[in-house]
Length: 181
Image 1: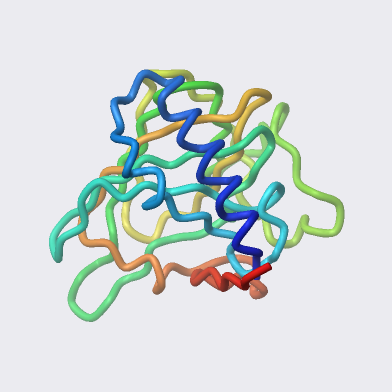
Image 2: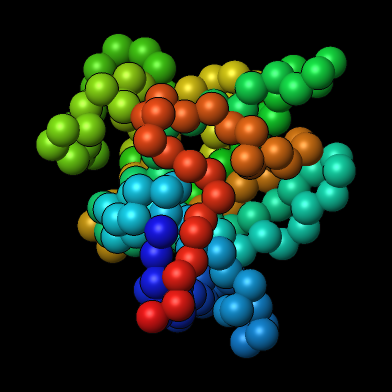
């Protein structure tokens, strides 16, 4: 749960970072930026700011902003019915993006908040700079963290079902609850 004033501040900050990345966005798109706290009520630490560019029943494109050190929690895109799950391509646009996948522990720059270690199984660290790109297969676990200045990235994917994503942390809730101040 986050306050409306937190959402407004996050939208302002994310919008400025998107523009700093050189991505053309219209002023009216600022209000469309979603601040996701993943039900943890610690937006600066666990969260993401998401501007959906397009979302149909077949594909989606988003701009994701991570503030410095902000973590988009470990998750995967599970199968739904006969569909194997969402396939997603991430392309770094600005800043350093710390991306973690399954594999040997190579974590050097990223950090996991004390007490949250069990919720982060993926420790194979990839440091992505603008222009770097990776594609996740359906069901492949991953998580992200913004570098020292934060990060702006694109997400291109097959069908979007974010509310059905699986999370390693059982406390994560994909729908953000906003309360008035």
